[in-house]
Image (cartoon, rainbow, N blue to C red):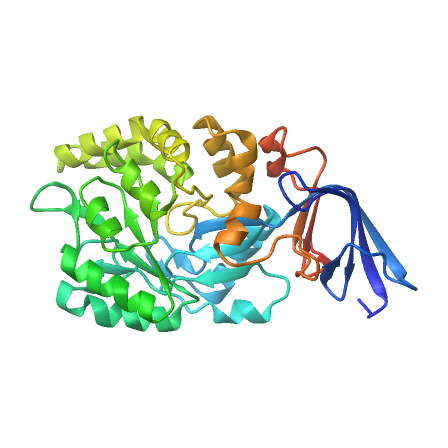
Length: 363
């Protein structure tokens, strides 16, 4: 696209939840709400325009058995893009995906480095597996490698107990989180169960992934500390199958997973009602396919979040939380076009009409 070629987005532009504009222009790949003088080679896109969707828990470069080749990672990123996801918080990957940053046609990625787990307490090939004495050093390493985030595995099955259990002593977690903060990174943690949550929140953690173990007594603590959650409900839907697979060997774990699954919607709604920030994430990668962002927004609505906050959790609010612009003047023109108002029915997100990335129509 030449310097004078422009893209004209016309219809209803959702610059904010209630900030609806009639049009925007894209000049040099960036948003403008002023018609450019002397524009030529104008391409027009019509419909309801939203900021590019955010998947705040996604794993580009991760497969069922660990890191994948670049061509597989590229297909993962393209699948997300075709679903309208143009900003990803990669919540842990053993692959080096920095090459994606050189591609204007792939979603932007905010990396959390590689998972950090307790020895033999996570999926093989995914994480650095360390003991508490080494946690601070590995957190510092990943804080320097990532894009402002570090990912811990907060709990996992303890085979001796036969159930989910916390991975880190509180003192080790507190020291590690403090080190990440000193280096300018935020910390999040994978947590399915209940017993790791209080220690992690009181240690200063910034976010919890899945958060199925949130209980009535913990919710006020999360709200008071402003700790966000990314529920990944499309992943939690797999709990019954996981439980069935482990029934004979780990019956207590299987029963626990079923209980967490059974109350998943009540947990998310209670968190939202208490003012805990809730964001959209799919946990794509590993065992889950990419491109599920619309399904996750719909799951939040099923959990009784109003449609507008559920939509914001994948757009304006999520971008603000991650420090990235939406459809602001001068921002990179990353947007999706839809046939109808997604504030009225979030299911329209499953069928983007147009996808614009860095000012270019890519889908």
